[in-house]
Image (cartoon, rainbow, N blue to C red; front, top):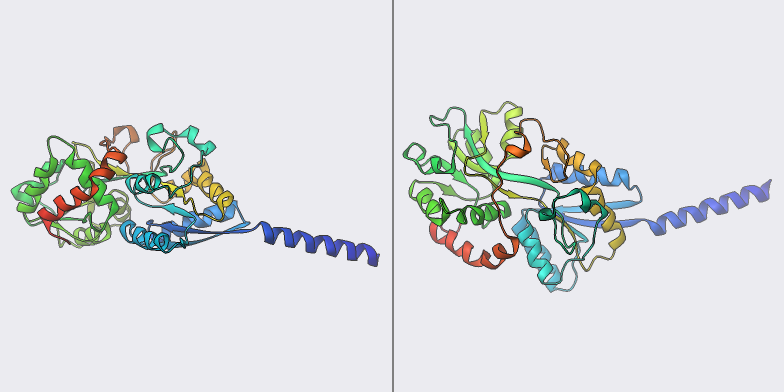
Length: 326
């Protein structure tokens, strides 16, 4: 009996050693809000209990500055990125900083939502539209409304120098013939303020400090559900969208575990997690969150990631020339 117990104990010990050896620690750099990042990581770790994920969160420009400094120093800490936009990841792809991984989950996504070489995959659709305080005199329906006299001095928007989504938004609208950079000049002349990120815009409009805001969709829709005096509008001209893509760094020391993370966030279960958080899933055949119109009624304006990447420096200079460097 003692021999049997000893043998069993040895097997258990070996099993624990194997589990410990097989366990992986991943580091995720993300621009998701803190509670969303935690929920995403918790969902993944529940499905993959042998993998631990630590995460670092900041706005896309700041998290990328941190990562680029680490890459320059030859010691990037991150295994994975889950950040605002495909343009940033296109830059990294062209620099050879992302791992090509062809996820089997890609079959459930429109080809336009992921890189053909598997360098990055969109996880959700986050559109930028107009929010307004319900006490506002004008109820906007189009982008053009924000440049009208009724909105003079009453518009807040995030700065592309601070927000990745705001940069994509500016580049998208700049490519619409009826809007373009002239539209931004009209907004500036009408007293619109461009500073900070989306959170600051939400606070400004919800508090009544400003009547109108340019902001990502889920923020005011969430706050309205909590009782805030705000509404969100998908403008008639269409909306820009960031897709919060996920990517694996080419320097990842835990590539197999990182691939499991990519597969998870693209899977039906992972997409259901984003849906519960109030986002439009990128995966085909998924419903939309409460408070959103049907997905096929939302007109998403196109943007070419490679072209936007090439124009980024000039576009930032153009925006700064109009609004200053906030």
